[in-house]
Length: 415
Image 1: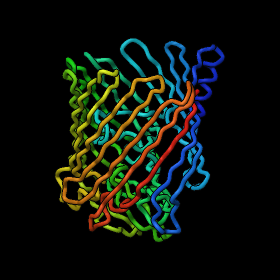
Image 2: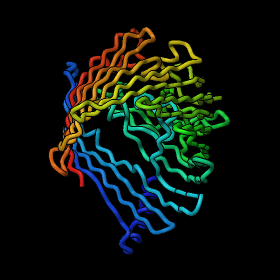
Image 3: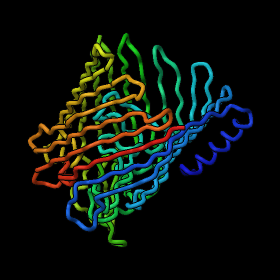
Image 4: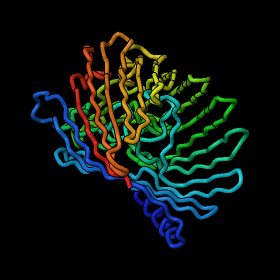
């Protein structure tokens, strides 16, 4: 059963809840505009205008729960941004210490703001926010049991959901031509295009004093570090996703006005035994690695009632060479310095600024500035500036996005 079929089943369950008067709904409609500093390349789109909408429906009828959340976008200038994403579409059963859910889910396994080594369960749409790409619902059967001051959740993932990469006309694209369908390395090393699989994960979360600590183990497919092959039958470039065995966890603890955060993941990636007719572009061996992130936040209040938070975060990839680190992630060894300011007024004004700086000798940096406020009880506006500089000699890391400075503005109506 695919994600769309799951959504249809959940919609029927929601309809049954509606008949009993137990349905709640919310959503938004937004006009999104973005413009990049012109690059002089006629094939790319330097401006974009899109209309997006999100609808969320929830039904509750003890002990049953259902939720449907769908996001859609239509591009007026760049038609390749058109998309329809099922973010959540699940049916749940809750009773006593147990909770069961089946369907598409958004899972957040992260403690940090900018870097997310442990937050690997959902595929992403990378034609969106570069620092925190939009998530795609993962078809999951999950069973949770309360244990101690937290719980243990077991997950079964029967489908492979791939990342969505920007079309080559997008300034955020990393590839000169459209990618073909993804390929997957099976446990025996064979290469397959089958969307069905048997993935699993276990996550234990506990609250100890003021600390939230989680650990996980999983066996699934790694979608964030593909290698690429040429398909001679279609002359297309296809991403090859490695099977992965991973252990990791997250930690967050408030100590006075300070918040300590950390994430870690160790990934063992499978390598193919036989690629058949596919032609590799590079070494197809999976790069086993450790990825870790650390964070420190400090918040305070001004005498005028405004709130402020300063954020320091860092991410590092270990167990690889510098060249391999650059292939694995755009932020291999980087530091984030950020500042958030909340005005706490009737308009709900918020200001954020920050920079991500490479400390691995690659001369790369990303800086951002954003501002948001309410225009009325239902309307909200947000604008953001982003600048990217990458002078590294190879094509990895942020090099493909060098000079893609942009401005984004969004007007959204919530209902």
